[in-house]
Length: 421
Image 1: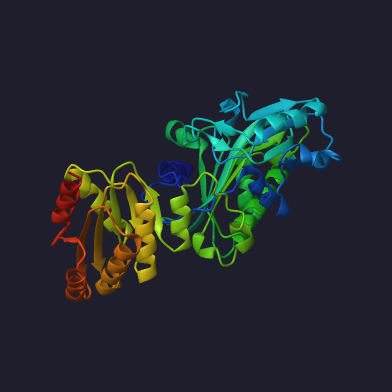
Image 2: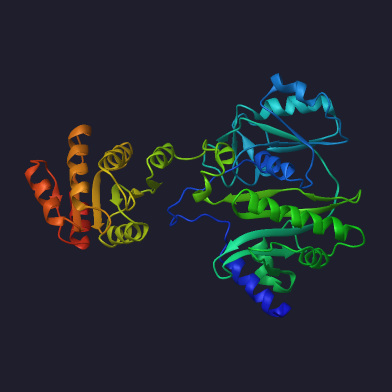
């Protein structure tokens, strides 16, 4: 493949933004803090900055043998823009640099236990529980390296650019010649020849070519080892003392590999996640909060999107995306109703289930039991279709409960919107 063709492929890959999570995804991704990602890199031999993690003055002893020329102190939250953020106590900046060791603990104390507010956090910010203190390295040049699973190539793809430390999507769009895409054999992995070729494309010179190639090989080994769907290093930096360092890293993991990666998934940071989403995940339900007032219980992500769209078309507003999946049981229906009704914004509930694998009778029994157990007080509209639908409708009719039935989705949406009034 020519370099021009590779650039076009790269731009196309990057335009899909593979490392961004969208609202339409029905899986809950593992989130790691910066220091956790760096710990995984270090365990695989990838060169990183030396660092320590503190939760406050009580951890001062961990700095006893940590002597560097300059310290960078970084609040650990799952949000960007930390350096330009501010805390609820008035302290400015979630990233600070100092050469004075005596200032490290006071800076940590101003961060831990306070909420950091940035452009990417909720309005009231995120509580900082840990702070990373790292060696502040002198960067001469920044490059970009990412390994991502790509459907189009049926396997991993290495994406590289000498224009690191920037918005890589903008680089792909404005200067596609600065992007190189290398499909990787899932059988053979990244060869040294490929790694060296990429290192030279990244404009490393002399003995740094070998160092950069070695880092790329180690990153791929980590990619496979932890069942990652993406490892993004931005920047992969060249330092003034001749090192090649992974300064910042983003890692995404395959949720289906959780049984193999228990130690990694145990590190999941959930403090900035909606508690209802966390609770739903425990019961294999997929929940995402919206801003409306009609709760939606469906089976299947596509059906969820269609349900939310038709609610909007009829003048309503969905309060959530709640997908119970294809193997739902009665206890999951109960939990789904409990999650829906825990949102005080929900003023009506619309159930829209198409029974393929799902047995409509199971859903109906779950609805009846849930309605009785939680003492449902908001209007409930149910549209069922598919496997065992007649038996399901009979269960709802004979329950004696105030459940509004609908023959199709449009009718169900209209009834749900009307019920609000």
